[in-house]
Picture (tube, rainbow, N blue to C red):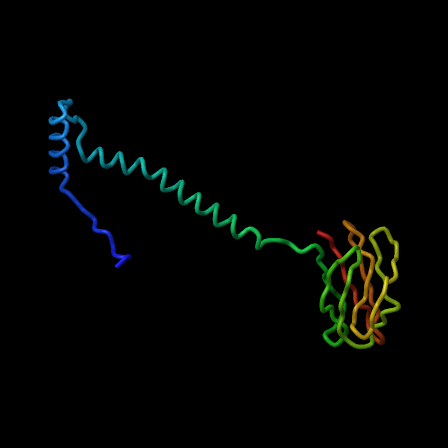
Length: 164
């Protein structure tokens, strides 16, 4: 019962014009010289601006609510140069200035891995845990770096660290 459609009342334009002229006559005002259909068109033209403004406002509001979904992660790591059977990067994250990489695979030589910055400086791993497959490197903020992780009897796993 609460959601019933409201009734739309319509009136003939000639009848509406007659009622408007009678209202002006009852109030002792000058009669309306603008045709009633022109008054209706003018009212519709005035509301178009507000309708478009409302649509624009709703679009901006929608974009405001959606914008948090576009947050970019802090670190992007891409890997190249390894086959499907070798080691794979499972997870990565940065915490307290340390880059943690979780790898899965066999024959990974954690102790020989190193991080090389674009200026040629090599950094050995800060720590590693072979049982969990985690290797840690110092995170050098705002500098692109290459990470090389040797794998026995295969090419090294090459990871490119690109800070955003």
